[in-house]
Image (cartoon, rainbow, N blue to C red; front, side, top):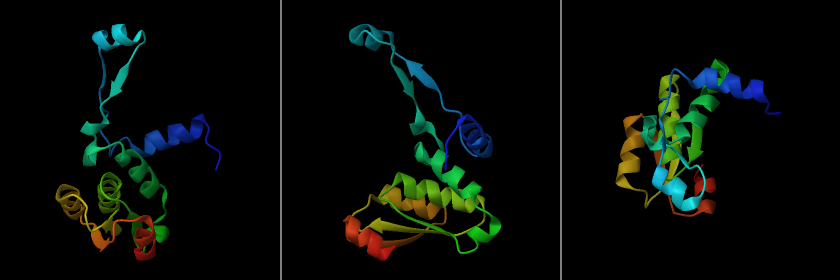
Length: 132
């Protein structure tokens, strides 16, 4: 897939109704200290609590109804898991999420809040991929 300006515009259009337009802050003190202009994009204020919502919504809303028939899946210990579960719920499909058994209770609760179905595994990549 080639990513050009139109591809980016299409993604922005696809997700705009489902994500926050988060603020950008600056700091004159940091600018002076670092001799540069520093910008803070506050994606911690995004839906599901992270920038991961943008990619998850774009991916899920790029799928056809047929492609969504069996749901979507991922392995993640937190933010992407919640973002994908939220995006799936917006499209009325299931989200199957593999999470390490030592995941944060807050992250687990976020996935469950968005109706994600969690399978737990050992906290290593091999176990995540086997469980998925």
